[in-house]
Length: 307
Image (cartoon, rainbow, N blue to C red; front, side):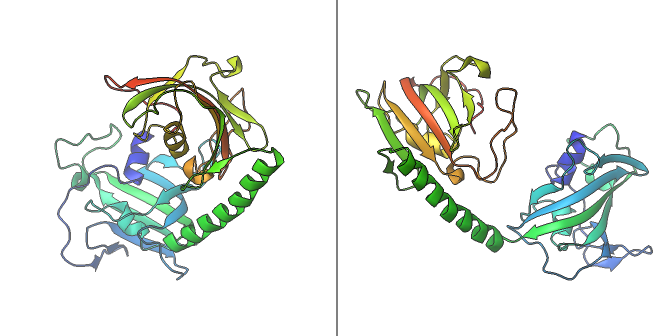
């Protein structure tokens, strides 16, 4: 299954000679300039997806007559969301998706030999020489970069009012940073603030604005009560953490009120036993944090859960 997703998202490097001119096969497939074959079975004629668009689509992937993946038949089946970006590979499925619009249905195919000529490429065990790799795509939704920017502006405008109300209702003495997050100093701390690249050690509790606790290393029900460590300013945590923690001193305590754009944005984070609700999409977050200590980082740092 993982190979189907890799192929779908064009993470696999495709390497075969591009066709010099567009042509059509006997069974009606258009051969795109890079060699990918495409046939639209429904064409709504609305604006196509382009670079920077985000699309939602249902996809089936098959090899010859064997179905490998069907987005409608996986648990909690939903259309796949994919950002469209310029293709860097020959016969990349991205090239075909940029010729589709909302409501379109189409079929794409390519011969496996063309993709896996390079001996350094790992061929999935279910793909053999001469197999036809085929994708059936139903384009559900297309949002252009302009659509996404407008929607984001609307979310941010709405969020700003919600956050300001939260601060007022809770009578918080909050300072707004240039980025748009808020910091409430609970305890000043002593000494210097940590620098980018240093390892910080934290205690924290994270809440939604409605008070729901979604994670904590201070509450045993979340099953991780050790101090939380990460390297500051390296993108290993959400942006609001990298900015907010950098303003604390050793022993300092603060409340970080973080807009969704500096947290998980439009991504909804799944729930767990301790918090079945999870984190809904476009949620501002509130973290009560304590900077226990910090020091120069040594060795490779593990990936952590807050990014």
